[in-house]
Image 1 (spheres, rainbow, N blue to C red):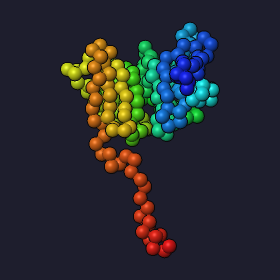
Image 2: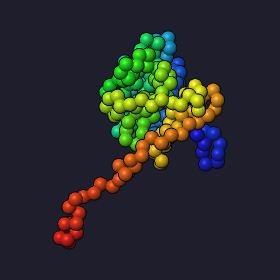
Image 3: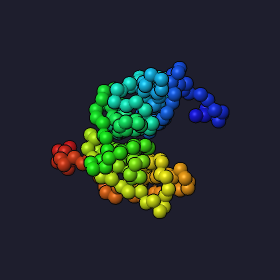
Image 4: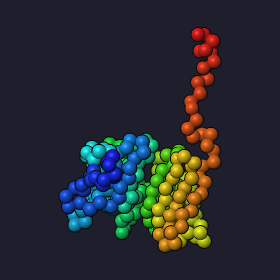
Amino acid sequence: MKDKKDKPSTLINSKESWETLSVFCSFESDDILVGMIIHNINRAMVVRYSSDGKEKHFIECEHYTTPLFVTENHNQDVVVSNHDRNSSSVVVTNGGGEYRFSFNGPPKEPGFKPRSICVDGLSNILVYDDNSKSIVMIDVDGHYLEIFQVQQNLIQSPRCVSYSIDNHTVFVYSSSNSHVVVSRHINRQEYLGKPTIDPDADKKKKKK
């Protein structure tokens, strides 16, 4: 982060003895989510900071041990890509830190290894699965929707996935050949950002 004079300024200092694993800046609340861990005692948490670096609260959930990636959904759910040697999963808590659900992978697809994670314009969760080399999509309540295969001929060792709310596209970045694949995700844009229409609007105007 930089101040008005373009000089680097420190906003957040990690908690003492905690190792920072992941960071997400919320476009909706301007808050900063930081995933942290203490290895020797197997504790993990996600800390929410305000845009000026003040700690708001922290979420310590027994369902994740390594918050490798973290993001925030449009309903303020905190979504964590949990990397565990025994059982990796996507873990979701609400904005207040209450546990909502875990997603352990698509049906008939053992060995789920969630990595980079983001949400789309419909609040669906998109997570890159390092086991199947694909993007898995689940809805806001954790129900499996579908899986998107990443074109291996275009991108090798995909690692990072992100979503553009402006044109509804998904970006997948490769760590080996430095390529980025861009693909259309949502074509039905008429359902996104459409103003609510009051069916009685004309009647109300006539009464006036």
